[in-house]
Image 1 (tube, helix red, strand yellow):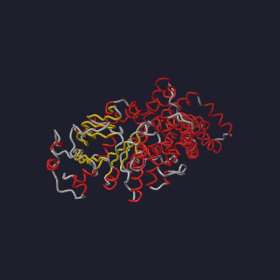
Image 2 (tube, chains in turn purple, orange):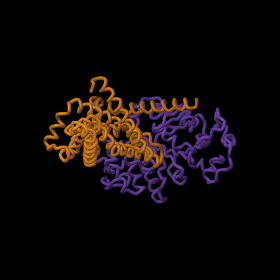
Image 3 (spheres, chains in turn red, orange):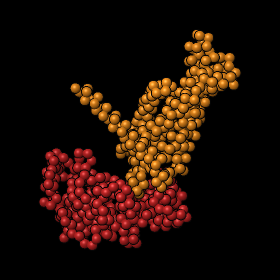
Image 4 (cartoon, chains in turn yellow, orange):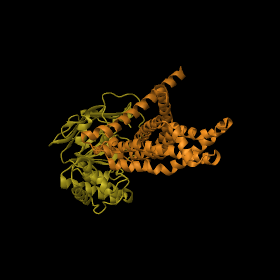
Length: 286
Length: 265
């Protein structure tokens, strides 16, 4: 039972993403303290964690927006921590990312937004691109919205349009940053449904960062709980639900932060496996 | 000791800033001049729409301002020239000060206010809303996509605007010339043209070309280094304007000095 994270995660099938002792720092401050994790082909991995746990940093590092200070990130057989920008760009053409607020380009229509990667990276005819755009918008339930400006869309629709843009290049891996943030429960459920549909239809590998438990339990094949830059727990939703790990219970049962003032107090809550090799006194993970 | 540390720190920061600007300008220049030869086409359509905003959009306000500047110059010059009974030199005084100095400078300052700030605000907002990150994850180089069209628009439009500004300045001066200095309009224009050498115009245009690079680099650099949050966009915009004005004047000084010593112009 792969309940607690170990340095050698149980590997079944082919790993699409492999992290080995990944460390990321902003200046002097280390945000991620040695993350090791495998995401299998076709799997939906949900990265859970509170605000400032480092989960967003982990996602940004996976798509190459942050450079790790050490460790390895194997994406489709290449260690993206040690490749050139040109090589990274080739990998990026095969991944899609949906940002928290959608990150649609405000000066372009929805259709132009979806068409952008195709226009930039392919030599397809305009008419072909138009068809692909219509298809992608149809897939996310936005058929007929090609000529709308992003500002005319609601939050949920923006997110769907962003997913359509992420799908434009037929990616093998899809990343989501907080897909349900800022959405009402009904719209959020619709986005969850969309993720499930995409996975069913294309067997895509999906990585989702969220703190929405309901959504996480619905879409995850496996989930990982990140806290203060460490992996606290990793397992299937069922395993996580049964977990007795204090930090997992606290997160799932929505218990307010106990009065933990010292880094070492907090570290005692972690399992032996996760105890870091070196701890700088007074340095708190963010 | 404290003071020395502070001065040292400020100098290092300033040099680092100039280094960052040079890097950005260099990469924009690479995408403008070299990358098209390697099969990465220029985004001419985006550059043209930028050129419309930077150039054509600035014409009304720039015309009005430089017309007034020309008139002011004529009045100020006349104050001194009148003492020598040399009022007919007003035309050459205005023409030379406009083409060599005030035409390029005033144009640059108007463009900083209109476009340098807009570059910083636009790119800064895109940074805050993760659009820059989105470009990168789509393997689209933000500098190629965003900065290069602005760069191209600016280095073409700023010299053009400067020529127009010079003309409007002379026109402003002619109002005084005709009304107070016994010129007929055509005579004033002819006197202005006679006073100018080609190098007066060319040095002014070289400076305006450099100003264009400076304004784009600062505006885009400030936009790209915007932190998180909407208030940061405001901060970037303000900084873009202040730093651009300072650097434009610094570039002006450097090039004017250079022209003075190299060619005596």
